[in-house]
Image 1: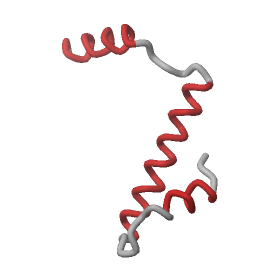
Image 2 (image 1 turned 180 degrees about the vertical axis):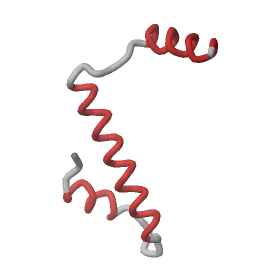
Image 3 (image 1 turned 90 degrees about the vertical axis):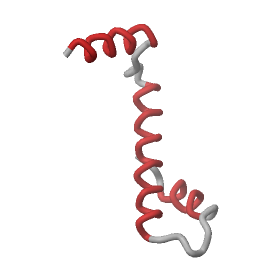
Image 4 (image 1 turned 135 degrees about the vertical axis):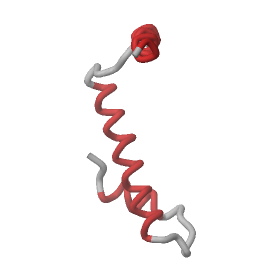
Length: 61
């Protein structure tokens, strides 16, 4: 989960004319990045070989 401080820090780099939609998109991207980091810390990752095997299976379908 992202913190309010992370959102504030991220918003400080945005131009003054940023739309609400762009701000919401930024929050969503920050949350996705944080979720991926948590998954990585918890070992919920795939190796390159696993991804290649999954891709080969998808192509067969």
